[in-house]
Image 1 (cartoon, helix red, strand yellow):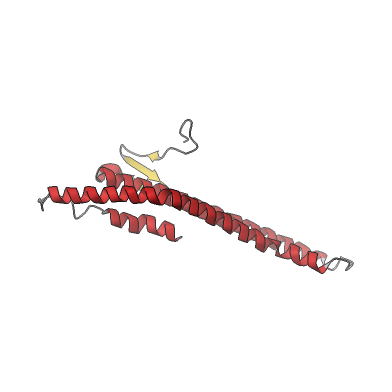
Image 2 (image 1 turned 90 degrees about the vertical axis):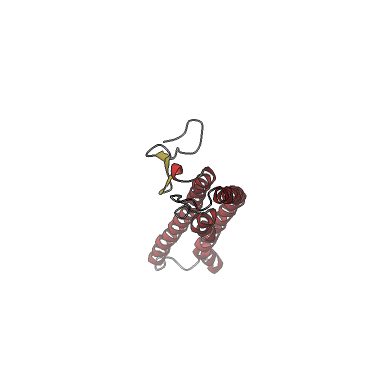
Length: 169
């Protein structure tokens, strides 16, 4: 469902405080505020990067399939031609799909770099705030029994498990 006046869709809400973004379900009530924000931001970041990569894969597959169909049609018509075609023109048209795929991949790379350059500083700032909050919480709770600090995700784990794989793609 689209948010009114926005180009983005609203995150799917299953229960209060539970969001599903790009197949990742996050319950913000299970985490401290800064860590919950980092989890939500990293989920959006991963979804954007995946969308760019999927679009590039779809475009290159479509170009390749079109080239394959065109090459099959060309092979079928070769016997019917009278031989007056220019060899350079034939080479250029037969290699055009390679240039199209290169262009599609270049455009996808440019889009990915734009997303990373916009989102990575934001993610690092939120991660830094989450880390500082984690340190303050550890200082307040000096090995209190019943505290779930061991079960709590750390900002570093979020960066390693969610953000780094998206950047590496």
